Image 1 (cartoon, rainbow, N blue to C red):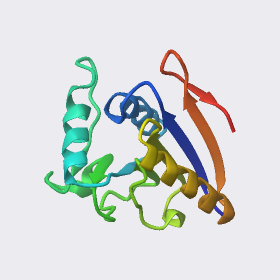
Image 2: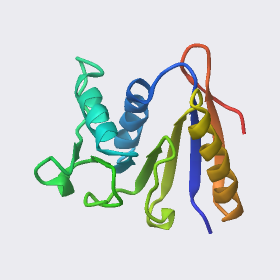
Image 3: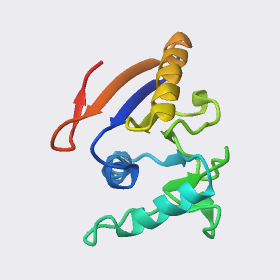
Image 4: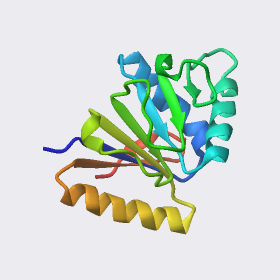
Length: 150
């Protein structure tokens, strides 16, 4: 039996703007997340964005460059490591992740303005569905909120 995989199609905001609110929901529900990114530059950019996205808020996170990554509620990586015991996988822009069976749920966020990423997201949707995962599709609305489309 597969897990629930929610696809989030970005059209109006970039990952650094849209992802923090989803991560806040993950943490408020008592979960830990591992965020899988394509490369170290993407990890660094998201790390900086999570520190500065809202001056009135704090989103605890770390990466391989952070002391004690096993203690971080949100762990950012360009690899396959999950030292924080995350139960939620977050794949950004078609980045690879370890076997999803190790998680309770996967959030798959992708930039729909990039044709290569969009094509990979479509292929991943089909593959995950064929593998027995429950897939849902959320598209960004005019206001930046999420609308369930499938």
